[in-house]
Image 1 (tube, rainbow, N blue to C red):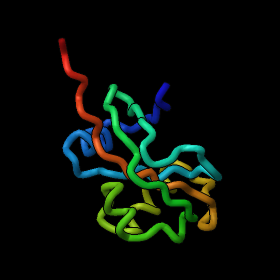
Image 2 (cartoon, rainbow, N blue to C red):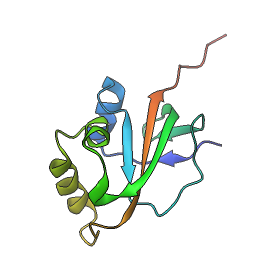
Image 3 (cartoon, one colour):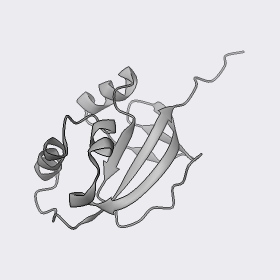
Image 4 (cartoon, rainbow, N blue to C red):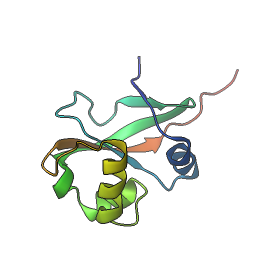
Amino acid sequence: MSPLLLLKRHYLQQVRAGTKTATIRPWKTTTLKPGDRLVFSGGVRAIITRVVRCTIDTVSAADCQADGFASSRAFRRAMRDIYPQLADDAPCVVLHFRLAPLPRRT
């Protein structure tokens, strides 16, 4: 069974539009790996293409942009809005993904 990741409506719209191709989670670790499948809220299915482990303050600008943010600063501001107690050196996982093809109807 594919893990379910919750996204706010705005972020889900970005995934559907193809402008959000990663999600950054404040997780210490993960067992997810490239090739694993995800299901986002709303039933949107994706396949993980890359997993990056880092800390909040070392997330790359490219990873922030893949997550739909204009800059690293905008990403950190959004994370603090969602997780007010999050430290700069908190571990996180960047899950890069592509949308999964829709199942064929028979």
